[in-house]
Amino acid sequence: MANAKHVAGAVPSDIGPSVATPDYNTLLKNLTRHASELLFRFGTFKKLPHDFTAYPCRVDGWDFALDEAAIPVLEKMRKGGIFLTAHYGNYEAMGPWLCRLGIPLVASYIPLKPKWLNNILERKIRAVNGRSYSVDARTPRDFMRILNEGNLFCLLSDQDSRIPSALTGTLLGQPVNVNPLPDFLLKHRPQTPVFICWMEERGASPKGTSTKGASSKKVRVLHAVEVGGVQSKVNDQFNKWLEERVRENPNLWYSFTHRRFYSQSPEIYGG
Image 1 (spheres, rainbow, N blue to C red):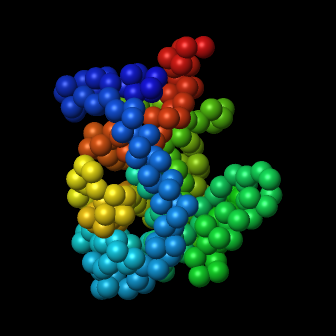
Image 2 (image 1 turned 30 degrees about the horizontal axis):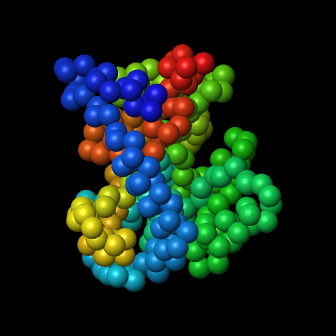
């Protein structure tokens, strides 16, 4: 909870409301629920309709919808670009959903060990219609190739960056080090569109209902916005978007469990 305590009430009143401290038990319950959905219900997201006009819809007893304002953005995402998101809600489930919508998603993951486990992830979980959207991109040449091929490159941008080329920024009223990759890509491909996408779960589940019953009462809504691809401004826009999500529900931002502010304030973790 060091991250949560570090940012709680840190935002000045002239900038925005204070950040509510997440409830530790609720955050873990949400994280466990979303992890179980990946293990046992991930196939549902791989059945979602391709056509935008098919939404809202119900698949396997779950309701899905596209935010109306997101539809033209999702249409543009079919032509590739840079896709930024965060460890917010069931972020992993967006992968197959975007693929089902005909978006050429490519997400870079560090391979897991042992190799057989990584093969299962890439072929069974992070794959839609026989196409894996998981790659192990590590060099600038890899990133450029992904963009040049017309893919939509996904980057989780809410992680702490401890590399020497990290940029400085502010999140939730506290200084952070920021991944320089979006700026690097835009420097070399300045016309590349940049998108932020996230999934919202509308409709709280009544207490005492089963997991299956609770899921059927929710509507999973896909949101997408395009942000100005101006070099050095994209990270600021992303952080502003993330702050809005965290204020909406701090119990859904799972980077509270990461050492998000480590590079700038390692002392808050007690050594």
